Length: 207
Ligand SMILES: [Zn+2]
Image (cartoon, rainbow, N blue to C red; front, side, top):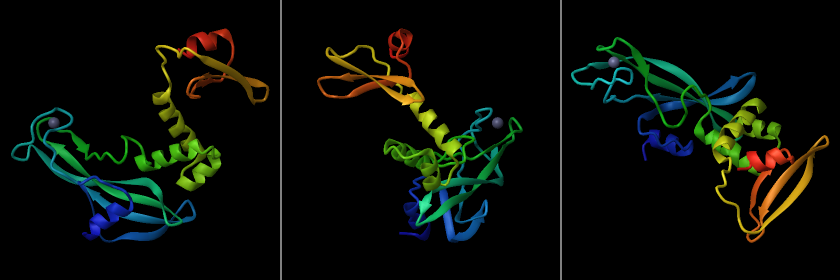
């Protein structure tokens, strides 16, 4: 396996357009804490201009400098690890605008890798505190909460029909506030937990 592919395998990056040179791993500090920086390059030949859509023939779109992004990766060993990604910039001669190379390892305008987001979700399912997840994933507790909220939107259940046999329960979850949960009796699956137990929440929010 080449050096570049070994690094990619180590940090779980599959994007073929990202490469690593030898000596790409450096020790450093971030916000006063020791960390590792791994420098990589993202480049490719775009088939079209992403702004005007013109096909890239005879250098209609040409490479024009790079832009450096710092992306938080999962820990390697015991150190917070950051990918310093040199992203290719492109210039389109047709519409005279520039754009930056994209990679599936990170969402647009986001500076933590998708692998970190997955790690947050796995840890949150283990009922770890925000602070503890933040520490393990080298991000702030606010970012942990944001990732959980983002994913929760997609996971929100929309039951078109309820099972034949339901069981209900309510429990206290914060200073006197009561939550309402409903369960499929046959298989024990929790269908949802609502942060309210009034008629409105049960009839409207749960469906
Ligand atoms: Zn263009």
